[in-house]
Amino acid sequence: MLSLIFNGRQRHNKMVKYLNQSEAINIDKELFEKCKFSVDQLMELAGQSCAIAITKSYPLSSNCSKKVLVCCGPGNNGGDGLVCARHLKHFGYCPEIYYPKQTDNQLYKNLLHQCIEHDINVLEHEFITNMDNIKHLNEFRIIVDALFGFSFKPPVRDTFIPIMKILKATSIPICSVDIPSGWDVESGPCTDNDISPEMLISLTAPKMCAQKFKGKFHYLGGRFVPQKLALAYDLNLPTYPGTDLIVSLC
Image (tube, rainbow, N blue to C red; front, top):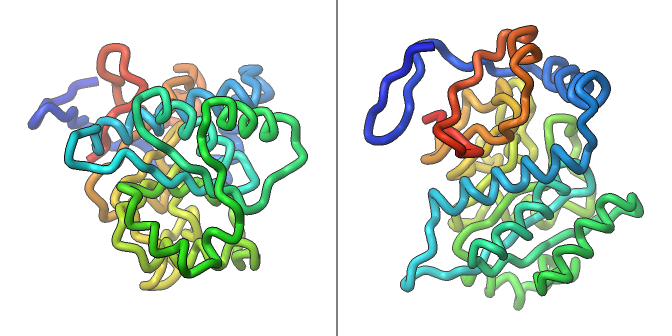
């Protein structure tokens, strides 16, 4: 596949495929059932990709805060966020986790335990509902949105309404994992007041809603798709540079 380089970013002469919801679900199913990946394997690769994308777009510097707020939901998207937080800690950032609906699933309990063992602070649910605490949000350089993935169906549950209101109103840059939370996986934002992230890290392949993304940074992460699976779905995935786990799509 031919490609061009502009300002250090790779441009491809054929557009990468944007997946609808059923395609995204079916590819995930094939990765698990046919390719025999485990959930925690893909979560680790996805979360690490997200952390790498963040370091490239928001590098550490002496005049910027190292604090990152990672907002996690109860599903796979939230698991990606927990892994991302752990890797950000290794990369020198100071992540804190907001995880309002924790699950009894052992995988997620293990991921959260790993974060705690890395001395990552886990905020109480009341952090978001307490106005005195909300004032401290400005201490964070970025917010990672790992609340809802491509299986999300409205309406937003009561537990997540306070954090969704904050994400819609904040001026802090938001980095969304795979899908901006609250967006329709195919049609994108449902209202003019939906989350407007500055960064989107698509995983496996971008979803159709990513065509409505208007932020600064769009990366594809998760360098784990077998070539024959990519060919079967005509994904036309871009070539990842060298040993990188992410590639820029904008």
